[in-house]
Amino acid sequence: MEQHDYILRLIEEAGIFFIKILFHKESNDNKKVIETVNNAFSQLFHIDLDDLYLVDNEKFISYLCNDKNIDLANLEIVAKLLINHAECESEPEKRKEIYAKALCVMEYVDREEKVFSFDRFNLINSLKNYEENI
Image (cartoon, rainbow, N blue to C red; front, side, top):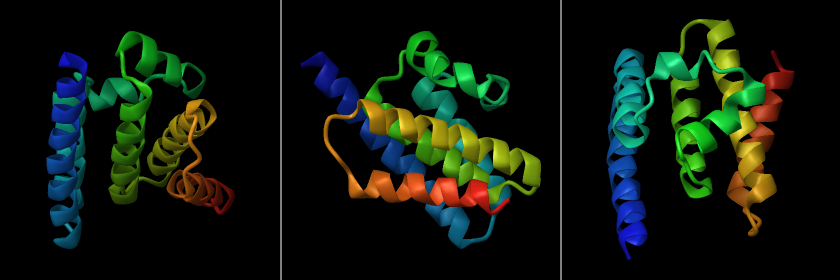
């Protein structure tokens, strides 16, 4: 029961962050979007965004799952936060790096998840297309 309450609370809190991100995106305030993503990582997962980007892609999933104890359901939240950050990042190299991390997470979720998701499939293809077009 405690695990269910924890997951429900985390999803509710993530939803609030995504609403704030959407609001800032509509206002074209990229700086606020990135700030909100940073706050989301800090409050939801106790992760500093700058530290997160220092982790190599090969060790990224291990870092998230083992070091930060993020479960499969919450990895999708991580990926979507990364995507929102990448969309607002002004530096092309950093944007590419963030998208690559999001793709890494989504591919892992896709491999491990027992249920097929068209949304996840489409998101992975979009991320792959972004990588190919750079």
